[in-house]
Image (cartoon, rainbow, N blue to C red; front, top):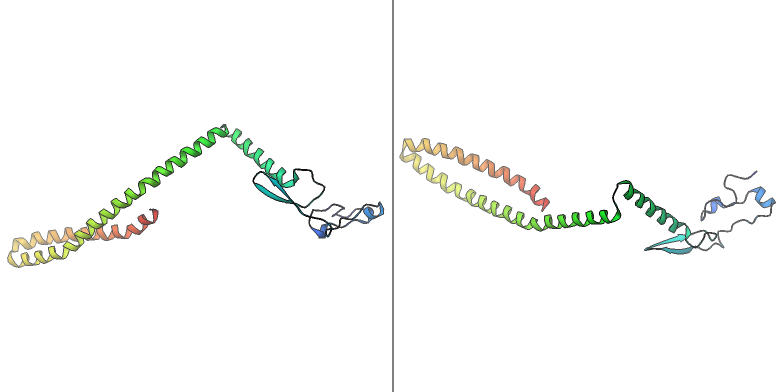
Length: 174
């Protein structure tokens, strides 16, 4: 009765390359891994090691590549598009991405200009509040108007802080 590993086993693995008792009785030769040479086979751009001297000219690696190529072709045909359509769609996608990437410096420049404008407003706020305090001291009507302005400038500075917090998120995308 033959063992589970059998005569041939899996190539390159000495543990599975044992001859069974029936193989020895029938005069079959045992595979000697020490005498076995590994050969490299080239298939297209890929190089594979072929562990089995009994394989044909293509070798197992090339057969795998060919079956993968056939699978890819079958997937293209299942999608109902030819390979030329797939290549064309790929080119169009790359072109669109290039245009999008090309516009990023302009978007970044606009953001920087907006930030600089907000920084200028922020620098002016202390001067405005100082002028407002002077005005409060001189007029009772002025103090009411100044409170309204101070409230609106606080809202503006809150909006600025919120915008400034969102900038790192935006700049990560650039």
